[in-house]
Length: 322
Image (cartoon, rainbow, N blue to C red; front, side, top):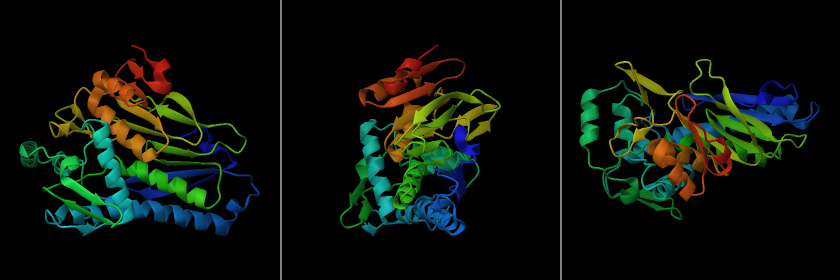
């Protein structure tokens, strides 16, 4: 989070979502209307409602979410889906195409089998997931946006954990913009989007964690204004199996946690949803192939390996070392 989080001039709002927390910092004068109790309460409610909608539509922990109902629907049946879910599914397909399959939504069975879903790790389920046909959502998911419909042409177990939080941040940003707020910082975990700059015209300072620091100290600070940054890594969400750390990021080819992956990948972009998806894909590609993919797609990305090894592309290209 930014250094401004404890600034008394900054109004801080937040709550629970998707198994973690969301936060919004509003930089407003102490006498601004947004600080009045009724306005603050109304904004808090609007923001919570926005992220609740994402959770209700895209959660794999809720069996009655729109996503889980779609996963359970018969192959070939067109199903009416809510607009937020359709938008994220469409973006997910675009991310899969952009990354040559490094970003993949059809990994729900593998995510659950490895214990990153609502159940414990299940060795028999891991074997079943590994043996399942390698069908990409790009091949087997049809979307009709104008009609609000989608269908599967083959069995799919979709999981949106690599893109949904970024979309949630975009919705937080859209909510504050709709209320006429010009200076805000919205975040869920490592996904952050700046609405404008700070009220004094300076960019928002956003810290990038040092994944090797036990105290989770800062690696560096970037300046953010009307832009998004998303970080994927194995230091926040992971499992330990036989003294080995398992990343929550899944390899679409092996349908198992990625191995020898960067400790973290940070992506800078306009859409937090797409930055989130790209950070996930670059974690899959790793320290060697990831920078090549980022360069080819014009993505500004910072790869942090274990120790002092770093590699940057685009606006991060001056931060390579090790």
